[in-house]
Length: 317
Ligand code: C5P
Image (cartoon, rainbow, N blue to C red; front, side, top):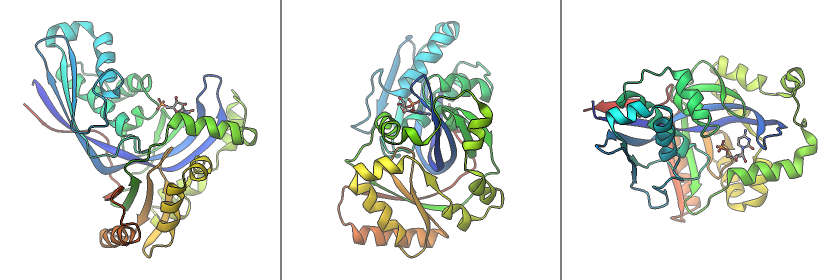
């Protein structure tokens, strides 16, 4: 096979709690991550040279070394030089559907697809845990994007333990196209403003475990109780992002007043806000209500749903 088409789903955070800061500048987290159907399409194919090339249909996405997908391919080339010599370089084509810099792991899921695609192209036979470990060196959300489904993520976000999958919960996403929030800024600001309210770079696992408050939503997930899940959504980063970005606060407040919305929250470091709803018909109705309330074309709205998997191979030639 010389070419693979992969589907790379986005994620939302059903839960994001900041437990402590860490000496490496990152934060110790307790998150619940959920794959959603909204996805990018990625083609990975062999080149006759040893180069890495990235193409993307989205003008905001860089195609140079700053692209995480490029860096995923460069990592594979550095780790497996014999395979690079035997099979040649790779051309990566990204068909972007996931909003960029949105808190939906768009870049991370592209990188995860590239790791999986190159593993197949180069017949490396890497296991999922091996691919997740490689992904963790590039970004905190990449291991989850390799795994997919419904997962508790701790550490920087790279330590995963699966939960029973939540299938077919309908979601409406809202994001202002022109609005981007830097993840590094959000964590840094949180540390500056609320650093005194959580643990300081503790190695004490018992103290860390005691600081986590996710049991209620985990129980709701185990019971597959969508209403209860929607009531227990949480994201610590809302404290800084909603305060600094009135447009995100506006979406959050508007969703909360729409009939049919069971619960609403910002995803990751934002600025995407999502709402959980009972059915597809209600999701479409909520989308229309949001559009009527905010006719601004800069506002992107999507209806999607939870899915039970991460990256999938759609076809190969
Ligand atoms: O790992 P990733 O590159 O996706 O993280 C982007 C930025 O988000 C990091 O540079 C860091 O500032 C912040 N971050 C953090 N703690 C985490 C994950 C990310 O402070 N657990």
